[in-house]
Structures are given as C-alpha cells and as structure tokens.
Image (cartoon, rainbow over all chains, first blue to last red; front, side, top):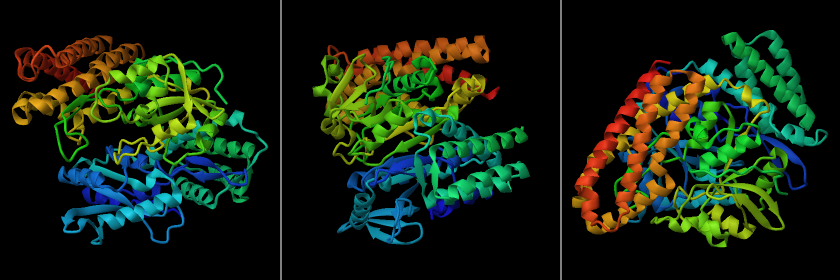
Length: 264
Length: 346
C-alpha cells in the first residue's frame, strides 16, 4: 500500500520544522488515475502518483525542482552544487524488498564526499552508501520497472517555505478542478462504454484515503457520504464498466463542487 | 492511426505552440502569445561558466521548462508527466486513440533532424555546445511503423520510423535534460471555455511575477538577471578570449533562435490581450511598452553578440555592449516593478 506521508516524511519534517506543523500529511493523496494495458489485452485502473508534490508546492508556494537523471558523476556534481547553494536535496530510495514502483521514500541527503574509492552519500538519517553501490541499486530498480521516475531527485530551499494557504480549502478546490477534467474529457465519449476495466487494489486504497479526508472536512455533509458510498461500492467490485467509471468520476466531481460552494 | 483534421499552427516556442494546438483541438482558439502568458512565460536564466554545471560556457536565455506545469496550475487542469519507457508506443497510441489529442513528447531533435524534409534543416542554424534536449514535438499519428509529428517551426507533417524517433526520446547522455521518454499529458474537459478567465489571468500574472522575483535558484529569474548585468562586464577578463568567443555564439543563438528577444514581446502581447478581460488598460499599456522596448533591445544585443566582424573583446566589453545592457536593465527593471505593483493590488 502506498503511503505518501511516509514517502514524503523527510520533506514534511523539513516543512514542519520551519513553520507551525500543518496537517499536510492527510492531504497528500490525490484522485489522478491512469489506465494500463495488461498482457491479456485487458485494461486496469491505477492511481497516478507522480503529482504527489503538487499540493505541497501549491500550499507552501514552494519551487521544488524535480529531475530525472541516472546516478552518474554528473548527477553527483549537480546535487553537490545544489547543496552548496543551500538547497535541501532528496533522492528516491527504494525498499530492498520493493514490490512496486511506489515502494520508495524520498531521503534527504546530508553529505556527499569523495573517498579514495569513489563518492560516498550520507543520508540525514545517518545511513551511508557508496555512490557506485547506490547507482547499481537504482539501475536494478530501473530495469525492473522501466520507468525513469526511479532516478528522481528533488531540491528546494528550506528558507523559502511560507505556509500561506488554507490546506483544506485548497485541497477541495484543487480536486474539484481536476475531477472536472477527469470526468468530462474526450476519452469519455471515445471509449467503449461497455468495456470492463479491472480496478487495482492500490486504486481502491487511494480512493478510500481521499474519501476519508473529504469526510473529515467541515464542508462535508451527510448527503455527500451517500454519493461517495455509491462510488466506493462500485470500485470494490474490482471490475467496472467504462460507463460506470465515468459515472463515479462525475459523482465525485459533484460532491467536490458542492463542498467548494460551501466554502464560498 | 493519424489524427483527423489536425490544425497545426506554427510559432516561436515549441511548448507554447504545442499548448496552442492542443487547446485549439479542444475548441479553444487562443493565440500562442496568450498561452505563453498563461504558462508563466516571463522568465530569465543566466549561468556563468562552470565545470560542475551542465555547461562550461556562459549562457543566457528565457527558459521554458516549467511552462506546462505552470499552465496546468494556473488553469486548474489535470496534468501528468509520464516517464515510463514506451518502446512499444502503447502509451502514445492509447492517448491518440482515446483522447483524440496530439501527444506532447519530449525529444532531442538532433536524432531525427537529418531525416526530416527541407524545413527540418532549421536545427542547423543553432550553434550550441550540447544537443538540443527537452524539445517538444506534437505526435499526431503512428502508422506503418512510422511516427507522424508536427514541429513549431514548420507547417509540414514530418514522419520518421519508430526506431529513429525512439532514439530521440532517450539520448544516451547522463544529463537531467535527457528526454527520458517523457510525455506531457493534459486532460481537457468539454466546456472548458466556461472557466473564469479574469481569475485565471490574474492568477497567472501574480504567480509569474512572484516566482520571478522570489526565485531561489540563482540561475533563474530576477536573481539571474541581476547576476547577468553585474557580471557580464567582467567575464572576458576572468575567462578569456577562447571561452568568450564560443559563449557569444551560444548565447547569441539562444537569444535569437531559442528565446527571441527573451520573449518579452510575446509576454507584452499576452498582457495586451489580457487587458480586455481584466481592465486596468493604462497600467497594462505602460508595462506592454516597456516589454516591447526590452524585446527590441534583447534582439539588438543578440545580433551584436553574433557579429563576427567585431572583436570578441569589443562584443564583451565595448561601449555599444555597455550601452545596450544599461538600456535593457532600465526597461526590464521598470517593467518588473510595475508588474509587481499591479499584481499586488489584486
């Protein structure tokens, strides 16, 4: 199960150290989705996680630079330069027994230095690893998942952190806008409405997390709960027609729209 | 399949043209200049020569790497960056088939430029020290093993084999600017014209000018501009003739071809058009005039840098260079101050 709060722990710690701690970790789950083709010709719905930092950027008005680059000497130099300029630098570190592209944590780098046998990396938690070993590890993960995001690093200046937005309101408004895009895009009319899509367990978990956040909101009402329950029942069947999927998206959009109206 | 009736317009920047064409495909006929503003196009970057950075030469241009992200944020659009290796082209085919939109792929055009028709020779004008990466091309179809795509500098629909196109999607360098199979994917809802444009425009200008002034990266925004103005007169003395000669060619090309006039006129046109939506015409017009002046000066400056008839030392430190830099500084500073003033009043 993907745990965004754990993935972003190092970053959130820096944010909360600088300002009064916001309950940001509750608002990290998003509603973006993607459809993957399976080998048997069927298609399956997954959440899209790679925009997990957008809400952080938005709420903290933070310019976070995200790069994908193999763990080469060039990358080491770039990261060292960023650190020398006073930036906080994090890289993706995958669990040894990773089962999924999302089984990683962003780890803050404390120090990178050169030893007789090459570069060494020290993470904020105290763990050290040689650059070569880390590179080989990352290359292995890339071979497994064939996605360049495994090489992601990110940096930002801690001094720039300014918490300026109301998280709850921002979250509702953000996902209301995005759900409009998701529920009304052209793919809705161009897809075979009767096609049955598999629903991944990760997708269901993600939706559960988002619903929990919405249900806790002061702008949420009982009638909204009934609507979200209808959607969840459909997702839980693990197989859903394209028509039903878009009906769920539309219902979710309606709930978010009403919640946003209550803000105003 | 190849997209039917794809209306491909040309333009100055690959990213904003791609956005223009994508939005037009979805019923929103906006000009490139207008999209440029909605994508926080007002920017500046400058890097001094550095062994540890990507380039050992000095470089100056108007960067556009985050325009898609900014556009999506300002408009409230769902936007995804897909980094999965797509050797079989399933992801591209899926977007073409279901979304009926062009697929915005990041590429290094060096890999296919010699296979393009006549207009593809555009790339030969660029005199850069490293291959052009992070270029955006609009893939509009895949058929019989070929990829069909449109570029911002030509009306033609180009096509190359999947094999060649794949090479352009992932060049064998260690650079973070390697395209890495990136696809920039937007979901645009039906009825998007209902969006409140006044709010969107104000948000865009506000976010743009705030990030320009508060930029933490010293190679970007106002910090980079101040560094450029301050350090340029000393570069020749510090780094010498050889490095400056090559750098002049690179920077001149970048300003002239990659970010003409630092795109200041383009941003000015965005503001002009925005005035219809947000009012405050006299304030906006004053900024527009300053930006147009700045654009003219940047182009003049680029032509001066590329003038081989003048010595390298003269182009770096001569009276004309100093005068141009002074005028640029004046126009840019005043325009920025006025943009801060107006956006803070909202």
